[in-house]
Every structure is written in C-alpha cells, then in structure tokens.
Image (cartoon, rainbow, N blue to C red; front, side):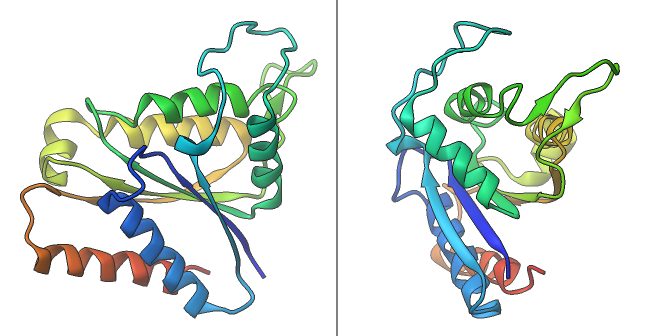
Length: 191
C-alpha cells in the first residue's frame, strides 16, 4: 500500500494542470485500491511565504504543521505546477522554505553533510507550460527540474520523473485529451 500526496501549486483550481493531477489520481486509484491519496492545494493554505527567522526556531502556522504531517504520511509526493517565468510559482518556493525546514526535512550534526530526515520517499512532477517543452529544455535549460531535484535530494526524497505538458494555450482539445490520458497512465503505472 502506498500513501500518495498530490500537491497542487496553481492558484487556479480549474487549471489544466489541476486536471492533469486529477487524471493521475484516477489512474493511481485504478492501479490499486490499496493506494491512499490525499490532495493539498497550496492556494487553500494560510501561511506567510517569508521565512523571517532563518536558522532560528519559528512559530509555524497550523496549515504548515498539517502539511508537514501529510509529508510524513506520504511515501510518494506528486508536485503539480505551472512554469511561470522559467520556474515554478513563488508559492511553491515559499511552501518549501516554510515546510521543509531544518529539524523537519533535514538536520545538521557534526558531519559536513545534512542528515536527510525524509529519506525513503519518492516524488515526481506534473508540469504545465505555455512554451513547447523542447524549447524550454534547449533554450532555458529546465531550471525547475534541477532546483526541485536538488531541494528534495537534500532532504532524502528521490525524484523519479518530471513530466512536461505544453504548449497549453496553443493546444486543441484533442491534444489535451491525449495529455490527460498520459497523466492517467502515469498514475496507472506507478509502482
């Protein structure tokens, strides 16, 4: 049995990225009735994006504490987000800053490298963009993939895949249906 947390980082719950995440969930549930799935919408959380007391203990909002509980519950985390200005939205970075803190996601002891407190978990990303993925890969250099992989690895979470869907705005319904099916199959084939 797998506990899967799907984190939606688009403020628009009716976005195509949300639809892709929902298709993934349908496939995951079809894959095995034993998979437990929980959804977390960052747009519903109430928290200060800014970490004001870096390297000091700070008071965490209830929504951040609940998010941390969900992360600890999960074996696998799926991040659904759009590419805005060549990277993931600021709310996702703020979520990482506030949630994946020292003492929760990692800690330092007398060794030069951190102790990875979230070890044993896996993750993947479902990413939408207005540019074609090939343009993003060749011209921009896939910033989000590198950054997300490094942040998660720092905490012990192994990144399994990044799945890019675009150009969203220029695509017809037939193409979008094909992408929804691809997201469904990602969930269906998750092991």
